[in-house]
Image (cartoon, rainbow, N blue to C red):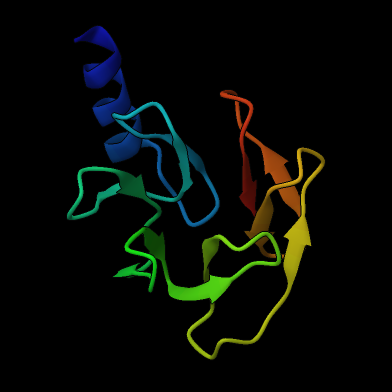
Length: 104
């Protein structure tokens, strides 16, 4: 309960375009957390359903590992492979406190 309240406070008070925000499910997002239709959380971009049924922030892009990640509206831009083998949309991998990466 405390964790949920803390996450809601952080996401409402300190989010910015590039802030790492702790979402209520324990994941981190860039910007404000938004709940998806399946109850998971994503970043503050437009949340969309990918062809595999997952939800991503922005235009779904198929990464080389076969998973969908959120991308730019135009479908162009850079995907980056992170040290753990995951892929993010952006030029840099930023490690979050829970050990996962988000793109910058």
